[in-house]
Image 1 (tube, one colour):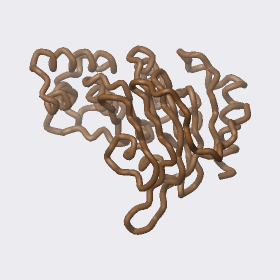
Image 2: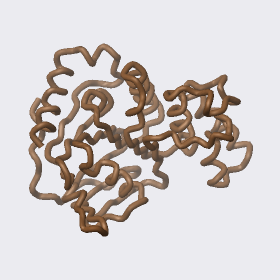
Image 3: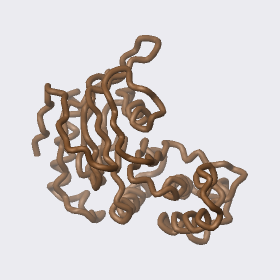
Length: 258
């Protein structure tokens, strides 16, 4: 499959949808003068799972922080048509003195949600990520994959319609990573959030996404976009199909040429 050509016209003409993200000509220059992002434009609409792949240091994580509001762009605009954006970081960032249930309900506490609703949201999120029975475990007793599930559950308690993922499965082994991809896909289908996913793994991006954007080396810019044609839900065996391998190869070739 051929990528969509990079559009020199950066202006995005898109109907504004609730729970969407629109980036238009986004650029970022740090105070030391280093330009990390240049003219980044794309849309994430409800029901889409969009992945960003690119070389290390191309600004993928910086772009997520701009979308989340943690950083301001130097140039361009980001429109977030959502009341709440969830963020899953590279590290689970769990509090070691709190149990699984206590970590999961942290965001509901910070948002001042009433105790009974907080308890229900926590229980639902723990069940969604497959951690029922581990509510009273402490982080030191959990595997890396379980810790990431706790982090994801904590974000899901607020039922965010837009969810940002900053390479959350990069530190786990390949088998567990595949399993977490499938579980996250199931959550995407059941919860209906719009997802923006940063990863170094091309196969992960192709398996998870409805669209993959390829970024250049720093300063990061979108150099190609691929629409992923596979229907959801996607089974593990898809990764070994000729269509999947061919598409992953096409993404890889663009990335290597960047």
